[in-house]
Length: 417
Image (cartoon, rainbow, N blue to C red):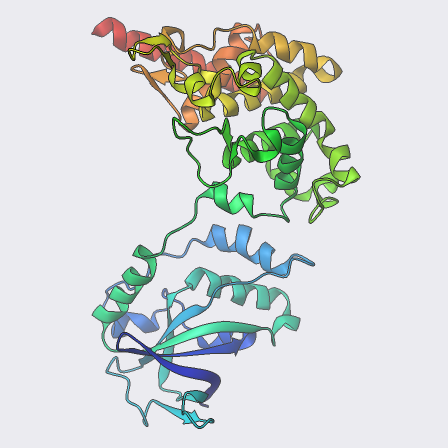
């Protein structure tokens, strides 16, 4: 049975296309995923898509589609009309476009049974839509935007995949989070931004990119602010980062405004932890007072001749902020209600200025080691120095053990040289 799609006919730099919509039920039943064996003979064993990441589909995309009151939206799927014999698509035989207006551009695209639909762009979206439909049949009539292109050759399909992906500019995680309003962790982070004098309502937070330029007035990126806030939330709510997704307190503030009272109820301890972290590093007050720039705290203070007078501080980098989040979370878990003073003591137990004391943790070869292992080892180093070297908290002990191993390995390499 032929498939009928209401569509608009167009041409982009010589490539014909049709823009239309399909019911979710059709998206689930008509499109053949790239992994389908049907494509093996047509594409002669050549892959025309990347492999499907099933965990991304099941853990992120399907819950997004099925979340109540989320009003999800996906960009259009790009589908290739491919004849089963792998030959060129023939108008009149494989498809017909029935114009319904005077200009001949708006009408109905009729796709015959011998034509398959290949997702040149959007296989993860298609898989998520199909799974959402499988779980909730009431979604059958939801309309999905599609762009349809005629098949020319396997080479052309592969090139279209390259064009659609290589020329697309993925936004930074920071920029995406800056526009996010549903995620309760981001809601709390926005409340932290409003409450902290250092963050100045977002004026000292980089809301566009993950990195901080030397002359940037920002002290932290939105990405890092959210990461640390998430770590602190898990600690104060006595759950895991993964557990935050289903925690009742977090579910209660989905879609809430950061200024809402219920947000502050959840955020109060997190705001307090951020205040201790900021206050434990006096140089931040100098930034607030305008006596030194955030960039100078990261890269060092130079005199008029360009000579370095101050090496800068690990605490002012993303690795420092994220390590401080792990440190604070560990102290909150270990100390219970007495965490505030103990956190201040722990932060003050080390010299945060860049130097050899950070070799193997926050620094490698004189450079700041802004990596996942570097963050964890930095946190472990500080916790060890603060006297938590033999704790019953498994997460904290793992950080400390990792830091000790990294420091020992770095010392061994240095001795060998």
